[in-house]
Image (cartoon, rainbow, N blue to C red; front, side, top):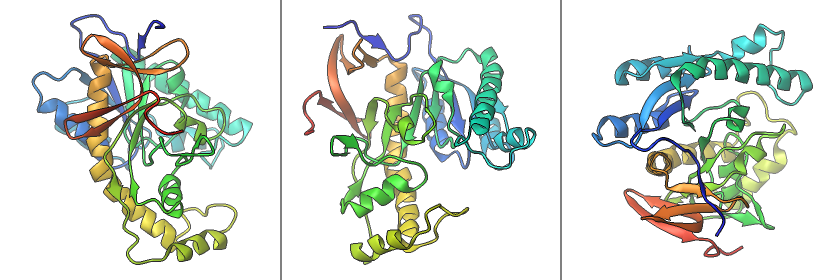
Length: 303
């Protein structure tokens, strides 16, 4: 078997130091903070909270409540100060500004000695991931494939809308190791799938699937600021809130703990492995349900 390299490497006896990144309410971040504070033997230390939206997120509130320092870098102000109104990476200028913002954030984080990061509802695409291992929670079951490719990818409510339009009966949250983006949002959903949540039932509230597919046909080519405002998006937003409670809050803290314990690793081919006792096993992913874990070994999912 190829040599396995853990996602993070720390000295024996030292707890990994984690940065939690958040843009809004911080409900996912707070689940980790609560878990760590209530656990006298937590395998990690939350070293810092990071936000791109200091005036509108709850980062300051959570930092004060849990005694964690906060790093702030207002991405809107950063773009505005450089003459750009839109937070876009679709243009060369936008990408250059995003890289400059990322470099500034790296410099702010340097004093904290971070071992890995957790994107817990962090909106901006960032290539922090090319130097720092980072986890990302995603509102879609990334093990679901169409034509051999991950289908439930994308930003905002797109993964949930795709699940609904596929006629799926349930949703899952996924936690992946985030990878650097190359100009598109979808490639950030291409990293190893460390864990998925239990299924969360989709409730269409009596709306027919044909009506929801008609919503897609009626949409403008470009997503309006503030969203489409149609019935499909409304149902997706409602489903996303339920998925956050029953999916994100279940899987994200547990995967974070397992990464801190050194249970995930990859080999030279990129194959994901999970350590059970003292032995590494090639896996597809792990299903988390409370404190229960179901390891899906490599080859156990249909392609």
